[in-house]
Length: 129
Picture (cartoon, rainbow, N blue to C red):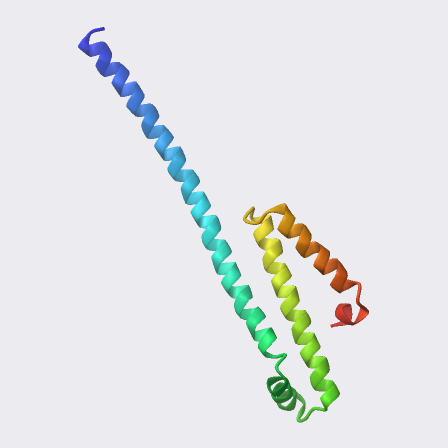
């Protein structure tokens, strides 16, 4: 093998290495974008869920109803608390579903969430809320 043949062979190998590196970089970039999107979504849904759960606190629920309606009864406060809890649950389920759809959660976790949704939705009160 001459030096010229070795140089040609080395050039071919380095070309394949560069191609492999670019493919790997593209895959990493795609995965990073997917995870960034999931983190943004998770943060957004987490904030909304926290807000819904905080609305289930008795004093805040009463204050919100007073601001919206000018007053509230104890039953209205309890109904609002339940609706806030249901809303928080729905946001949690949405987050789990979206992460499963993006391939970031295992099927076992998704099926566990789906089982919880089925149980909750079997309640007429939860469906109404």
